[in-house]
Image (cartoon, rainbow, N blue to C red; front, side, top):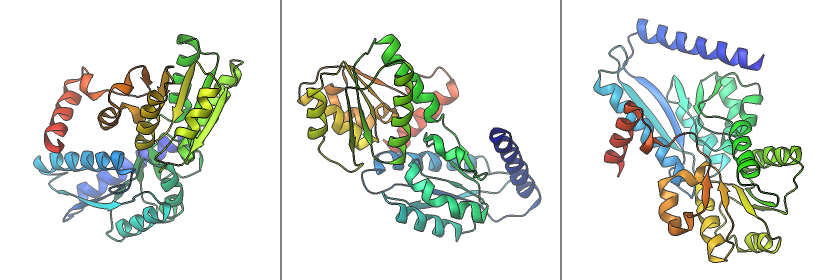
Length: 297
């Protein structure tokens, strides 16, 4: 039933926006973009902003939508809920028609009450499953949730890599908790218990304590659910500490910026991701990727 209403709401949103743009002489179409430009979360947040800028430029080069140009209202959500809510207030004050929200679910949760109150469509690529289970018909996810992605990589660890003694590493944000819960349930259904479970804060710079605990537990694989900057630290320090077992990481490890930070420590790392633009056979995606790299290199 929730999926039905979400689909119905999305259709209504598209029809509504089409009607407005087709019948109203707007000076410009304002779209809010809220993402992390500062703090350790900017490693991913700035890429979201870059993509929005590129998309808006492409539309505007074609004359906009029905002759009306797009204007992005960009605000920094940094790494706090308070900053995200302040960014939302600023964007709403500019009378935007829709908002591209941050990927980080702990910020989205804080923004939801006002989004629902103001009835402003918000889209984001967050994978935290609970986001679409909170009766917010103004929120639209554009990325598979953890119930799909974590199931895929946990089953890969068990069925393909034959893991019997996994160790789990999770960040304490809503994203980390969501993934951890799903991974645990899938392992339990397979009759497997983790040999170690560790937690860390999103801004932690040293994972030695967690990794030493994992090393003592003698795992046959490490499964992590973390953000880009902490994922890079985990992967690098795992190899530095001589923990030479395979590692299955969340989508954060698919980012080229993480690869640059980690270097040779990426060897033996399996990564969950829904797309690899550099290798996608779709010519439209390849063209977009090349354009993005050229503009933001």
